Image 1: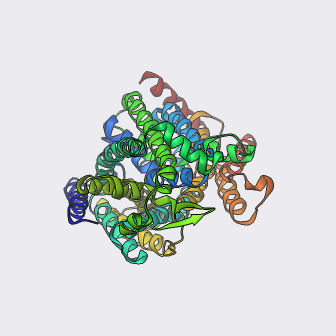
Image 2: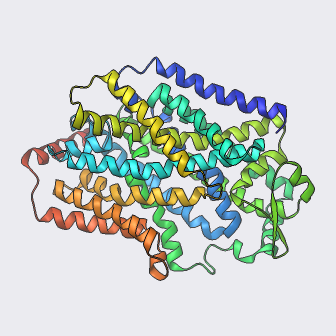
Image 3: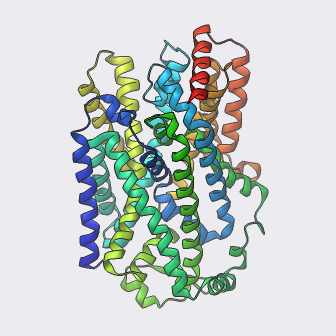
Amino acid sequence: MSLTTLITFTVYLLGMLVIGLIMYYRTNNLSDYVLGGRGLGPGVAALSAGASDMSGWLLLGLPGAIYASGMAEAWMAVGLAVGAYLNWQFVAKRLRVYTEVSNNSITIPDFLENRFKDKSHILRVLSALVILLFFTFYTSSGMVAGAKLFEASFGLPYQTALWIGAVVVIGYTLLGGYLAVAWTDFFQGILMFLALIVVPIVALNEIGGWDAAVQAVGDISPSHLNMVQGVGVIAILSSLAWGLGYFGQPHILVRFMSLRSAKDVPKARLIGTTWMVIGLYGSIFTGFIGLAFISTQDVSLLNSFGIQVVTENGIQMLGDPEKIFIAFSQLLFHPVIAGILLAAILSAIMSTIDSQLLVSSSAVAEDFYKAIFRKNATDKELIWIGRIATLVIALIAVLISMNPDSSVLGLVSYAWAGFGAAFGPTILLALFWKRITRNGALAGIIVGALTVIIWGEMLEGGIFDLYELLPGFLLNLIVAVVVSMMGKPAPEVEAEFNETVRITKER
């Protein structure tokens, strides 16, 4: 990395820490730390939701998958775009209203307990445990992505790069809480969006246009050009199933809860959906064009930038396909622009890790410490418990990420499935079905989470190659409905549901 690139990159990192420090002085209570005091405008909410959602997966994982396997991997992007839109369309407004009506709930476990009037705290504790389990893996995926960035850019050993990336993210999350996370995600979302427009356009121009790129990829691997040929039904269903995960992702749902008003949802939906669709297109084209570009480059030039290549079936390929965006940043751009583009990758990584750490720490502070051990804990005490939890969870995630061969996409897919299967049907039923009971929600969450763990870890081959999110989601839904039909919700629960429906229609 040139000195100019290094300076640009460093200035960006310091800027994120400054935002964290500013928001430290604006964080006065637990609601501020966990939910930003429900004061986010539509632009900040939409871009922070998108940035926290896409993570390093958008700039590393998806381009790497397209690079390695071709357009068949684009089904995943289709599923995600549809799922994100439906989440904004149907869940956002109702959840914003319901969490306020239901005792001003500030976390997902808090909402579930209040929604079902569960005085036993079992639903809250179980939900918090699921969040801590899967977010530890999700956070580790971001740590791996950050390590790959620092490793490729600075030539650092993987473990050293891992710790540097972790320190920056932990720093501003510890300081500023939700406000720091939301505002840094807003700026990071803009940076990611611009990067995913600029990089594929410049790369396409460098290789001689779209026809030249298609011709080159076709010569390397004709199957890379086709979304359907050679792709089985199970593979397509698995990719599309990613969209179901949106309904259960705590770090995205909390963005809906933090909107200043339910009236802001339509504008936020337009901003968020546009950002996502264009970003996904840019990511896909980055991986697709990258395959053609790298195959034609001089090996000594690539090595001089620290870009490692291998030869497969006579074709020159990246040793790690997930580093194609990094390679483009180094090879095609002025050092200042390269520094900004590398910062965009770090933006994608940090914007998800910080959200995950914050949701996890709020689960510890609000859903364990306050709910069970210290009901009269002060806001200042809870904020510090949340900060300590942030540090501990981050350290565990770093330890999980120590293997340099870890896959960003692999870790993300497991955590995404866990949340989608455990919480997706539960949130939808809680928002739109009056008859769901506490026991139905509890049974559904258990079945959904266990299905992901068992299906993903112990079963393999045939129908069991289906992405574990889909069976987990369906089994949760079935079990929750069946168990709920065996009981009946309390009158006050039904009354609160009806009140939420009335207010939602008015707004």
